[in-house]
Length: 255
Ligand code: NAD
Image 1 (cartoon, rainbow, N blue to C red):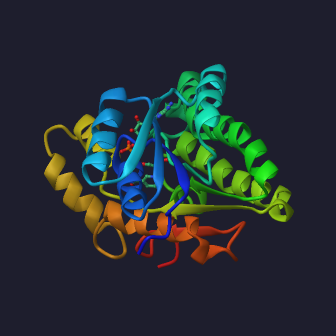
Image 2: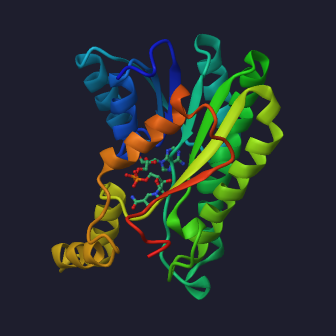
């Protein structure tokens, strides 16, 4: 399947996990990939891998939480490319109740998970409007939809990703722009491994099993299961879908 031939796709948080796999997947389907992330060395490795596999990829290191930096980097991107698809995947987590969340924690989560998406969409949407076409896909979470314990700041910011998605979809529905989000449950990525390493250094493997079994389906999602949904929603096959949220959670929110 080559659904992204002649399409330019910008993926944030491209250096790791879901973002990385999404870049590889879309490049294999013909997309020209613009990979954005904080992590410059990992971005370079990803772009090299895509090129070795016959694809096309360009790396743009950027801290998405810094509005001025994003404006500068995206001006540079826009001089060279028209963005057909914007995938807002970069995100950070925090574990804790409101009492365990400092003002600094809250500000950091806000800056990356909410303002980061504001920065990218507001940079890209004028050219999508000008061309009367564009697709935006945001990464929300099960924590956007149902209560998840000890995720005060994460749930708060991921809830905003959901409503931001609806707002963009509504405002641009008559201008050829689709905007959707997906809400994953646990996906096995470095995000999860780093969490376990930090919080359970002595029994990481045991906690991995416990976390896996706590999902209704009995395991975590694989990154390729998530990137496959992202690819579908960003392709023309999903031309009738906008303003929607897609849980991909092994039954977490309903069973
Ligand atoms: P990950 O930690 O493996 O990758 C996230 C990437 O985002 C990293 O490469 C990191 O460098 C980048 N990033 C972080 N802050 C940034 C910033 N300020 N500027 C630029 N890049 C930045 O994470 P993942 O598990 O692949 O998660 C991707 C998305 O999916 C996140 O938004 C996360 O909240 C969401 N999600 C993940 C899970 C899960 O279980 N893994 C579940 C639900 C939702």
